[in-house]
Length: 461
Ligand code: UD1
Ligand code: CA
Image 1 (cartoon, protein in one colour):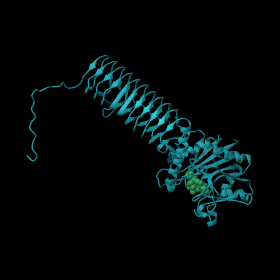
Image 2 (cartoon, rainbow, N blue to C red; image 1 turned 180 degrees about the vertical axis):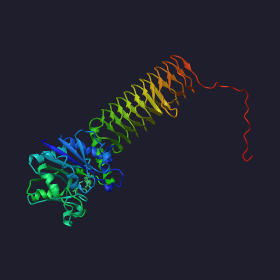
Image 3 (cartoon, protein in one colour; image 1 turned 30 degrees about the vertical axis):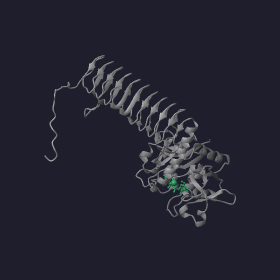
Image 4 (cartoon, rainbow, N blue to C red; image 1 turned 120 degrees about the vertical axis):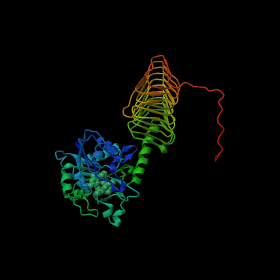
């Protein structure tokens, strides 16, 4: 695409969301809706992307770390026309086409946006607007077309006459405008309308008055331009995106037992012959290999999972690494910086935090392993806990290869259990255990023979 800049309008609060969070930050499949708009914008390989921020500006700026983005602030939200004009200064030296898009329509795809700009260039239009034909156009601006079929203006629903409201072609809020016209036109936009706002849509009428070439491009899948104004629309948009994402995964060789209840962020890679059971949510920078079985009812976020991994029912896994041929759960909590190596096993009611579980090692039942480094082929008995916190600081536990930790061992950190050592069940281990030795740290059993229990007290006595 030729010389291009993009302006993203993202300053609005989104009153209809009834939220303390700026609208464009509300997540759709685990990612802020604005991030999808950025994906589409950046796919155009623009020279620059100017984001107009206002409500929640600090948070909005965290959505992307792309070097192409620059931010301008709209201090008062006086309307979309005013928002677009906030980019004037930032783009004053830019000559070419300016694409303006709303930050609140996450279903737009890169291919649709690219096609829109290509048509604008091909037709050498001065202004293009992306439109859609809707069965129910309620709430959107309506496209008015002239006798030659090209758009001549946009009327907002609140300002439209009864007849105009029957128009079923709507404005998506996506425009491509020659910079030579845009900035001057924006200066002429006023707020003489029902909402008392500066409408960006008015530049279409201005272009028509100047006899400029206007192109109205109808999108083929109207879902793509669905704007999110309230939480009902948010949920609809998520269901569309979920279906789109899940369909791609299934076609690439992943079995989803129930796509309806499977939520996966777009862009997450999952290998062939992996099966995902219902009620599973997979978000963030996650990656899952081949031949895995995941779920039902798992939450997996920012986690790298290798091949042949089984994550059984009801596990909560975040910011972890799980290598190959590993079984986890049911009911396991795998926390940030957990690193589970090939062939390991993490069983039920086990919590792992900031710890390495070495190759072939097992933590099968009811354990907390935190700030620990476990070697290869270690066996951790049921109920074992690393006592890693002394109330002020966290301390490290080191368990070397082939260690056998008896059930219900308390490993009081900092501590090191040497290669091949064993701890007796029920031990509190507070001193290092040398290689190959047995450590027992518990009271010796006493047996009192012929012990008679006192007769039980009767009630009321
Ligand atoms: C707008 C269009 C409407 C179109 C619809 C498509 C106008 C006047 N109307 O209406 O024709 O059918 O989008 O979804 O443009 N924003 C700012 N600053 C402001 C106001 C808004 O940055 O002062 C941003 C918002 O954050 C949002 C976008 O602009 O991302 C659209 O604003 P919104 O209030 O949702 O416009 P609509 O009423 O939906
Ligand atoms: Ca909107």
